[in-house]
Length: 308
Image 1 (cartoon, one colour):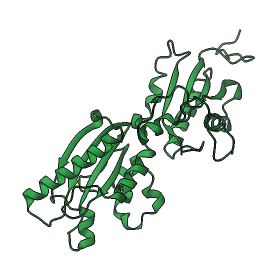
Image 2 (cartoon, rainbow, N blue to C red):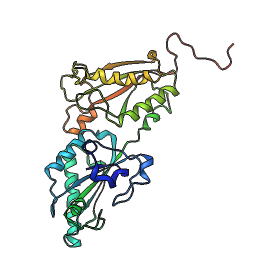
Image 3 (cartoon, rainbow, N blue to C red):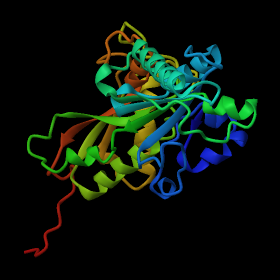
Image 4 (spheres, rainbow, N blue to C red):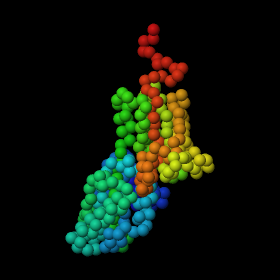
């Protein structure tokens, strides 16, 4: 189960669409977030894996849930993972602490088998039955308490602004737009990508002489060629991903003379041979190349404060 902090108490009515998408906690939500371990911080995402009674084995349906979630999460966008295991109150405190720790370790091992590096795991704890979500009053309530909470901390997308604090030698560099990833086979970004495009828009407005090339990429092909787009029914998926960002900036008033777009297919992969869903998601991306900076587009002049 995936819950953002604000909707945690509404878990019984969460739709399937929400279950299959990662929801980040916004600033407005974090003050009202409620969970056993306290409120989430801004930029964190909570995922929950449930277990059978007295078992530390991940159930098939829970693996399906994890696989779906990981497919839409780029490992390069995550800076920390914290795992906390819990049990119901069916056994002794000592047994429950051991079991809850085993559950957390099982989830860690599964995530690592999917390509998530050990360096991301910042804590792994077992709390037994000491932090229940409810009173364990019936079988359904006990099911909710038999869980591992996975807290993902996402990379702050404001890092894009860091590149422009010092514009020396910026021309010619490529910048990966972290958190701007795409649905499989489509040029439509995942929900968190729109925030990244908005940030790029702000940068383009702050730097009116900045000119960029928007570069689209796909995953999985080994020949460097482009792939089919389920929306356009043409073999131009990487081009359409770049064009989506181009069209967004154009619709917001950025002049077309300041931008071009190009698709690079499956070339220049972050992960040359994807080994798991996280690496697949990371390769579905858009980068920007700084074409020029500080030089006005052709045919335009920079207005002087005191024209002569």
